[in-house]
Each structure stands twice: as C-alpha cells, then as structure tokens.
Length: 332
Image (cartoon, rainbow, N blue to C red; front, side):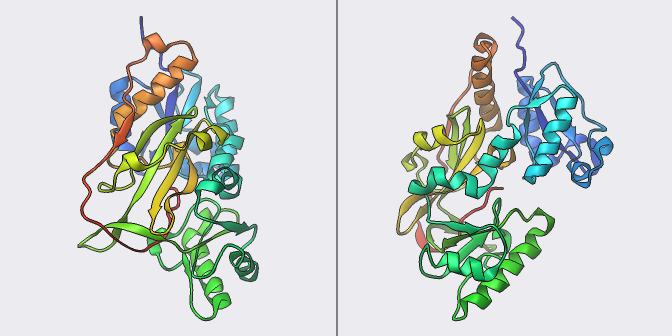
C-alpha cells in the first residue's frame, strides 16, 4: 500500500533563493525528504509587508490539503493572514489562528501553567509605572521582563533585567531597550516575573553560560520529544511530562519550556507554538517528524501506512554543575 503523506510542511523561503527553505531548517528538510513528506515555501518578509503575490510566488501545493507551518514567530494578525491565504489555495494549516494565539501569547497560556510555573503577571501596554505596580504584586525585585511572545535574552541584561535603587527609572529604561530590540516584532504588552536563579550547567570559555533548561514538544496532546535545550544539560528523565497541562492547551502542536531553578526545582517558563519553536540540537529531526506523521496517520486511519516513530527522550552529557542568577527563556 502506498504511503499517503497526511500533511505538507511549509517553511520560510530563503531570502537569497526564494524557491528554497531557509537554511536554518536544513536538518528538518533533509529528514522530511527522506520520509517522503512534501514541502513548500512562503516568503514571510513579503507576507509581512502585505505583498501577497510575492509571498506565494514559489508556493507549491501537494496532494495533501493539510499543512504544518514551520517558521518564525508571527504576529497573530500575520498568522491569520497566512492561514486565510492558504485556504484560498485549498490548504488548511493544522493549527488555526485561535490555536496559534493560545500557544504563542503568554496571557492566554499562563492560566494553564500557573501552578507549575515561575510566578508572573503582565500589562496590556508598555507603561513603566503600570508595569512596576504589577511587578510588586508578584514579589520583590529584581524583575525580569519580556513581551507577550518573546524576550530579549540575546542582549541580557539589557531589555530584560529591572533592578537598582530607582525601580521606576530602571523599568522605563529596560522596557525601552526591549522595545528597541524587538522593534516591529514586539508583541502585545509587558510580562513581568521575579528574577529567578537557574541551575548553571557550564560556562562557555568563549562567553555565555548554559543553564539547566528543557524543551518538550507535543502533537495532538501527545509528548513526542523531551530534550535539553542546549547540547549539554542535566537529567531529562527527571523532568515531568506535564500530561495535565498538555491536555489543557487548546492547540494541536505546542511546546513547554522548563528550567530547573535553585529555589523551586523544575518550573515551566512558558508555552510556545510548536511550528515556531526551534528544534534543540540534540533532537533527531527524522525521529521527531516520524512521530508527528504516525500520530497524524492514526487520526486519519492511515496508521498501517505510516513509518514507525521513535519517541525521543534525549539526555546529553552533563558536566559538574554550580548555580547562579540567570534569566528565563522566551520561545525561539
């Protein structure tokens, strides 16, 4: 019996070769080719600019009328536009716009994780005075901030950490840095957390540090991958699977990011959309996509045609560890 792919995968087009997927997804493209899953591209820069002809110039439909988006974090209105334009081309994304928002926007997902998460609050604006008033309700300073979809961890402590004697001045400065860094990708308002200490795994001799962090992927409420976020890490088997949380998230494809803190043990940092969450380097992309294919085929009564999956729990080497103050992680 011929294997009928249950979906296609849609990647961002490479800016220097618009017919090809962005090379950042090369490992996954190779795996999908090996499995036999069709792929296409959309020019996201053109989509964001409102150039729909340019956005879909090299889009090619397949035998499947379902697709999984595997790309950048989009604003909800951009994702809604992508979804509606694909429908016009007889393709339906597996994650609809409301489900995308449910996993991408922190205020929508936090009620589902609050009992397992680092404490947090948020404001629907960028007003530093309102942010500081909200911050005081979740604990003492210092504070860590992000927008509704992502942090500015790449420039930490700028754009992230609020501390010092004059907290209002510090909040004003840090919000401005966050907005400047995120620019037109800034989403919604400001999320505020107490600054927590994460377990340190290793210091990079070239700069930077690796902390005890994990990413869990779920497809149709089923855990398909649990791994350290970086190439090295702690004991992934000690991290819960969070089945109750997974059942409560109104999305077919999402991630749970977890960190081991000094004071609270393993805590959920946030939920992310599965399609726009990076695959950690220790995860085998072929096994990852085979797991998704198998579940999708089961739901469509094609399980006997699907290649067998391998559910992944990846434990890399773990050097001796210490701990120090760190910041939490936005989806990426």
